[in-house]
Image 1 (spheres, helix red, strand yellow):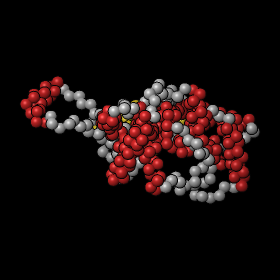
Image 2 (image 1 turned 180 degrees about the horizontal axis):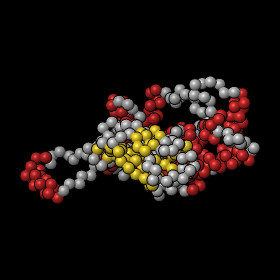
Image 3 (image 1 turned 180 degrees about the vertical axis):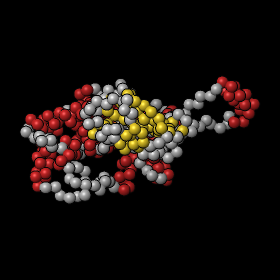
Image 4 (image 1 turned 90 degrees about the vertical axis):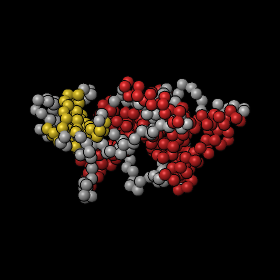
Length: 203
Length: 181
C-alpha cells in the first residue's frame, strides 16, 4: 500500500491505516504518559515519525510467518514514544532502590537463614559469610542453566511478576506450569549446590 | 549491555512464533538485559489491554424494534460516521490473597483483602495439576477450608479468590501456593 507510486494512492493508504490503527497507536502513546496533553503530543510525534521518509518505518514490515502486524506495530510505536520521552526528559535510571543481583535474591529463596532481619539488624559474621558463599555458588550454577530457565527466574525473582503474567510472556499453558517449572529449577539449583558441598539451612 | 533486541525479534517473541534456536538466543538476551526484559513486560501489558471493537448481542424483539426505528428515523442519523466506544478500563483493584501462603498450619483459613463494591467472592483451591478440589462462595473476606477437604502433607496446593464486581464480571487474585504440615 505504502509502496505505491501514485501519491494519491499512498495518501489513501495512510488514511486507511489511520482508520484501522489510530486507536492502537493512541493506546500505546497513552501507556507512557500520565496526562492528556502529553499523550496527544506523543501521539502527534508518533504519526509524524511513521509518515516520515515516505512511511519508511511502516514499509520495513515484511509479512511473513512470524509476528502479527499489530504486535510489530505496537513494538515500533512504543519505541518511537520512548525515544521521544528520552529526548525530552533524558534517560531514567529506574527506581532509586538498588536492584539486587538475581543470585542474592535466590539465596534468600534457597536459604532463608541468610536473609537479613527486617529491622535492619546486622547479621552475624557467620551468616554473612554463608550468604556470600551461597551467592557465589548460585551465580556459578545459574550460568549453567538453560537460557529459558534463567529468564524464568529473572521474571519471578528480579522483576517480581505474578505467575499469570510469566505464563503469558513465556507462553506456558497455565500459571501452574510456571510454578511447576520454577519448583523444578529451584530443586535443580539445590541439588547443584549440595554437590558443591553447600547444604541448606536444615541441620 | 549496548546491543538490544530488534523489533522483529521482540514482536515474534510476544506472539510466540520464534523457532527454537532463535528463541534460545532471544531468551538468553532477555535473561541478561534488564532494559529489553522491561520492554517485553510493558509490551505484553499493552497488548493485553489494547482497545477492541465492542460487539453487541441483543434479543430478536429488540433487534426488530431497532430496525423499525432505523427505517423511520435512520436517514437523519446516517449522516454521522459510525464510532465505536472504547471498552471500559477497569480500575478496580484485584483482591489480594493474604493467607495461607507457603507452609501453613491447620486448620486452613483462607483470608483475602476486600474489594470495594464486590457483591461476593468465589474461592477455589487447586491441586498441583490444576484440578479444582474445592470451591465456595461467600460475602465475607475469610473462610475456613472444611475438614472434609483432604490435603496431603507437604504437597503444594494453590488457591485464588475472585471478586464479583458486576453481573458476569469477576476480578481475580494471583494464584498462591501453600502446603500443610
